[in-house]
Image 1 (cartoon, rainbow, N blue to C red):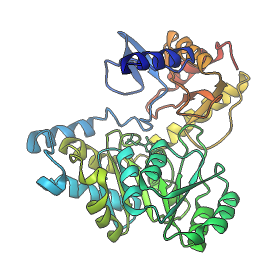
Image 2: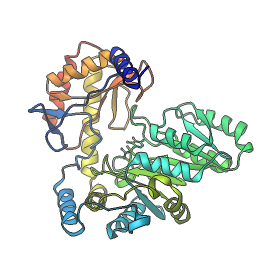
Image 3: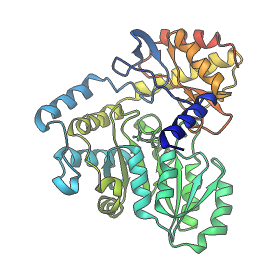
Length: 386
Ligand SMILES: *Cc1c(COP(=O)(O)O)cnc(C)c1O
């Protein structure tokens, strides 16, 4: 069969399964309100938790760097050098997470791929939470290490797997998201740290959704639990409102990544303007206790409102509120239903979540007004499905 014919058949199959994706077109800045198809709607599906993506200070920092450093970084830093902002950013992020050093990557996806691939290989073993982010899974695959999957947030299962398998390998790694992006629950970090120590394993914690949002001054869940991971991944495109990511850890580990992480070595460095904005974001995030409080207050109000309307939602301290509808097509119908009522909530389908757990993933933004929250709850209460 010619490739084109095969691709068309695959697309058809995706469409029939309700899994074909056609993202909306936004013609405004990312904020609590967006313009979609010329119409203003409320955004309840971003990771712009603190509402910093359109913050005037970040625009100003980016604009100043554009004027002085231009647009592109021109090559990998190993080829054309680090721009001073890259080094300033790495110092700022290391200090933010209170670890000795950090390396800047273009995306969180690239950071996870590069960090795991560089440090682990065929002689090694990785223990991974069943619901780890795709970029961690892909990093494990790329490394060539054997992978054992432990049941979601189940430290006892991890302990059993470590006892059974660790001995046969050179290095071992435990990987987990800190806050799981699709469910809003979090990893048992102190137990994971203890198991890593007992079994001579390293611990990599991906704080993509927790950094800026949870923990003292938004320093994340490791900071909240006084857990020092061997590697901490933070992303700058979510609560920080920018783009890019960093891996933090010991000075040796970071120097090694900057020599051997392929997604760092063989990729053009992040653009100066976005790096400058991210440095400014670090300062804003540290001072954003009021935004964090408002975000969690909104999440609390939404959970209460949903429960009163008969939805099954779990109580927890995260801004991520999954409403699991199960069926992919119904989930997309629900998303369209809400958008008609001016509320943009994306439906999340496989492969982003396991089969039969399609869901609306509702995320408020700190800069939503109370009236925005009431409007969203009213629209949600009209949904014909629970
Ligand atoms: C979003 C996300 C990433 C990827 O980060 P990007 O900067 O968007 O590429 C990595 N890990 C987790 C847990 C994420 O949620």
